[in-house]
Length: 471
Image (cartoon, rainbow, N blue to C red):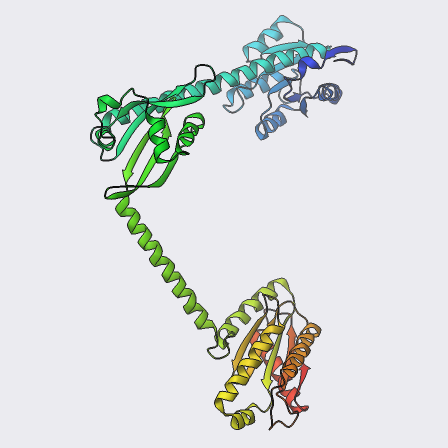
C-alpha cells in the first residue's frame, strides 16, 4: 500500500518488517516534529531530544535501534555526540545516521571517520530517509542474527568440548553408569526415531549384560527405554530438541537394587546420561520422611493440647492471652475496634454443690460448646477464662456488634434449658456478661480491654445477673 507523506510516496508494505526504535537528536523543534510525525505514521517508535547530553542519557535508559543525528547543535555538535557514543561500550554498536544541511565533502568524510553509517543532507525527502533507515535496520537485524548464531555455535562447541573431555576422562573409572547417545532422525521429517550409542562405560555395559563393543553404534535404545518407562523416550527427545535437562529418581526393581537416579543433558544432537544406584539412600530418605511426618503429627497434637482446655475442648487461658496480644497489635496497626466479652455462669457454685462435680463439669462443657457455636468467623476466639468464666474475642467489632453476639449467646444458653434449682434469677442456667470495645493504641494495653470487660461483667451481676452490660 502506498501513501503520500509530506509530498513523498512511501510503500507501507515494504516497511512491514523493518520497523524499529528511532532516537532523533536535533536542537530545532520543527525538525524533530516533522520527523517524529512522519516516522510515527509509518509505524516506527520515535523518541526525540534536543541536545547531545540528553541523547546519551536517553539511549542508556533504553537502547535505540538507530539514531538520526543533526550536526549543528549547541554545547555538543553532532560529531562530538557521535564520538561519545562510539567511545561508550554500551552504545558504540548503535548505527548513527547524520542528517545535516552541511553538504561539503569534508563534513561527510568527518562523519564517516567518526563512525557514522550514513549522511543525509537537508532539505530531505521522507521517502529517502525511510529507505535509508530500512536499509540500516535490516543490516542491524542481520548483524544481531549473526552474533546470536556465533554465540550459539560457541555454546555448542563448548558443550561438545567439555562433554568429550569429561567422557574420555571418567568413562572407565566412574562408579556410576555413563553413556552418550546420538539422535537418529528421519531423513524426510527430521524427527528423532531412535538413539545410537556413541559411548558407554563398563558399568552400563555390565547392566545390559553386553560387551561395550556390541553396544556402541547399535540402535536398541528406544526398545530398551520403552520396556523401562514408555514415556521416557519422548522426554529424552525433548532434552535433545530444547536443551532442557532431566534430573530425577526412578523406581526399577532389579536384584538387590530398586531405586536409581539419572541425569540426562543435551550433548550435540544427542544426550549424555549418568545413572547411579541410590537404593540405600532412598530407603533412608523414606524412613526419615516417615519419621518426620510422625514427629510433625505429634507436635501438632501437642500444640493443640497446649492450647485447648482439657474439659471443655475450647481454647484455654494461655491461648486466650497469646491471641489477645496478637489481635491487639494487629488492630493497633489497622486502627479497627477490638471487642471482648467476659462471661460468668450465674450462681455456678450453688449448681456445683447441688449437682456434684460431674454435673458441674457437664454444665461447663455444654455452655462452652454452645458459646463456640454462636461465633462463626475464623478470627473470633472463644476461650475458658477460668473456673466458670469464659471469654470471647471479637475482631473488627464495635460495641454494638459485640452486644448482638452477647444477646445471641444468652438466647443459645436459654434454649439449652439446663435446670438450675438454686438460682435466684431463673429456673435455668443463665449468664452475666460484660462487653467492652476499644481501638488499640500504643498508650493502652490488652489489660485495659480486660479491665473494662471485667467491670462491665460485675455491673451485670450487681444489676440482677442474667444480662449483658457494655462498658
